[in-house]
Amino acid sequence: MNLAKPIVTIENLSKRFGKIQALDGVSLDVNRGHIIGLLGANGCGKSTLLRHMIGLYLADSGGCTTFGCDASRLGPQQLARIGYVHQEGQLLDWMTVAQHLRYVQAYYDNWNIQLQQEYIEDFEIDLKARVGALSPGQRQKVAVLLAIGFDPELLILDEPASGLDPLARGQFLDLLLKIIQDASRTIIISSHILSDVEKVIDHAIIMKQGRILRDCGFDELREEYVRVRLTRAGEQFDQASLPVAVVSLEQSLGQAIIICEKTNLEKLLQLGREKSWEVEAEALDLEEIYKVLMTQNGCSRGEELAEVLS
Image (cartoon, one colour):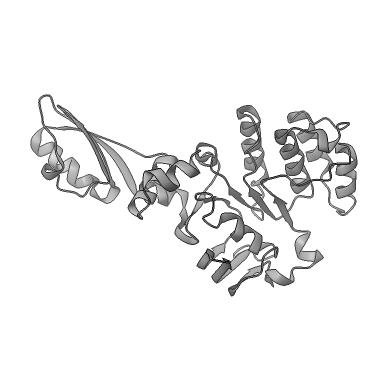
């Protein structure tokens, strides 16, 4: 197995549904051994992109290869290496949970019984319950188990935690960190719960209107912007007095809080020394970074921001 070769390669991929351009010339590589956060508002193309990776959708132009195979021609050998959880947790409602597990398990020689037992205990899965009678959160727990039980190399999670309560979401995130200890595995998680995603991802892909705004390591993304607090009693701060372009500015007499590109931090520190300002800098969390990127790329706060953070 070549761990250096991308597990998924997408080149200039475009997809249209009627008048809607769902994907517009998307290109990216998905490398092994990462937990990748696929982020963006509803309708930005996240689910469409994921479904191209497993051959559920066919591209209008461009291409997608998964495990070195054209995604539109994935066969049993490749599909047996992919776990996929749809955001709606589609299952066979007439079966009990135990029957559903046995049904899926029969297709895989490498089903991880130990993982299944630990998962059932940790998430309090009722094996006797009929799938159709489960709550949305319980259904999602079962769907995740069915996707991870055979130790897939590529695990694709489309809003997997949307129906889980905070405690279950925390357990689920711990599970992802456990799974990714194997360097040959890759996890792609699409979610609007950015505070959760931030805890586990090491790579971020941020989409807007069918295009990719960012495709980079999470640490690299966190280095783009910084929050700076300027303080001096009686000082009247305004944007004209600052030597850098700012993304946002909140001010009151004696204090200003700005967000700017981190490359400008040294200029502010120097100005603070010259003017005897107290200067404090801190990193932004993922939700704040997302807001900045959307604002910088022409999205009003009443549009995409509210949608992805709802």
